[in-house]
Image (cartoon, rainbow, N blue to C red; front, side, top):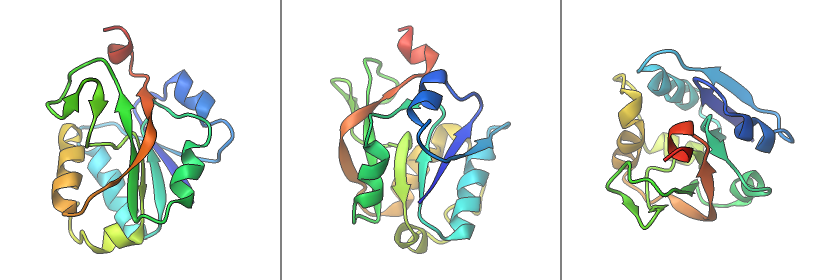
Length: 152
């Protein structure tokens, strides 16, 4: 299964945890590039794993997604910040783009989802509200290596 890393700057910890894998980095420059990235994936209609540029995965996380029979699954984040109202005691319950598997099943059930450009700040909410299905949750969660998160 292909692994993509959309990025503005890939964090060193992300590079380290992805060292055993072949992955395709995708440079994002503007506020709408992330939605274009997803539009491109939808047009390919192939299963893929999305790993954000500041995600730190535990060994075996990628294989856990690859071996899962669910058509859409992801890991939550462990964080002490409260960036979003969906956080509860440091556990994010939805909006899990950090390490997510997407299959043609989800793609087929969300035609046109990326027809209009979406600002990167709203990509997660857009996907989860438009999908109209539950994303299978994998555990344990991954870590966000965003310097703003780590310094708080």
